Length: 180
Ligand SMILES: CC(C)(COP(=O)(O)OP(=O)(O)OC[C@H]1O[C@@H](n2cnc3c(N)ncnc32)[C@H](O)[C@@H]1OP(=O)(O)O)[C@@H](O)C(=O)NCCC(=O)NCCS
Image (cartoon, rainbow, N blue to C red; front, side):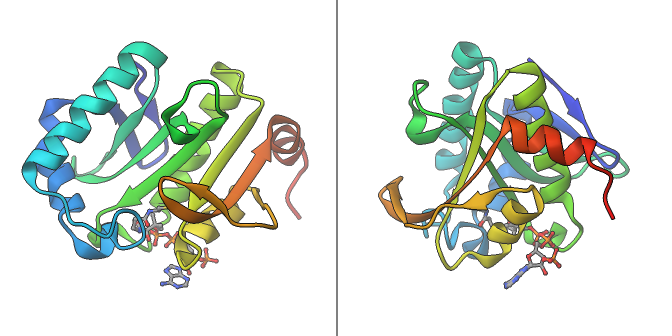
């Protein structure tokens, strides 16, 4: 399983050892507000870890725990998966952070590393991300990744979602064009 690194984070494939840290995040109402709206029980988090372990086994990617390198704390989670859980659908990026770690730029730091992994290592032609239309903070992460928002809302995960996407060509052009 693939461990990834960024300057401040170590991205570890979900493991049973992440249960306490993931549950401490997923039980927070403000974390799940725009996702399921329902804070997780310990059993919910345990089941989520098991589901993503199965994805790692069949797809070779899934959810990573975001571990702060300087403290060892579990700051959040981020993923590479497929829209709607179907491998025939485009790849999808996702992220969430414990509120104690909001405002540090960790979501975009992890998202950029996973996007590079998806395009370079998994040869994904397109990456998508979806959000509740009111989830402005997540939309900003999508913007900073260089994604473009589709004009219409789409139905995913039993929700009307704002849909953002970036192609490999746009990604490659952005990283070879010097920033002004
Ligand atoms: C989405 C999330 C990961 C963003 O993490 P973060 O650490 O707050 O991200 P940042 O601090 O880099 O903020 C991202 C941008 O959103 C803006 N922002 C943050 N909260 C905001 C809010 N409530 N309203 C408007 N803008 C907001 C920030 O100013 C920043 O914009 P900027 O870079 O132009 O200054 C975090 O809010 C989170 O974990 N939310 C709960 C889980 C979730 O909704 N995940 C996404 C599901 S689609």
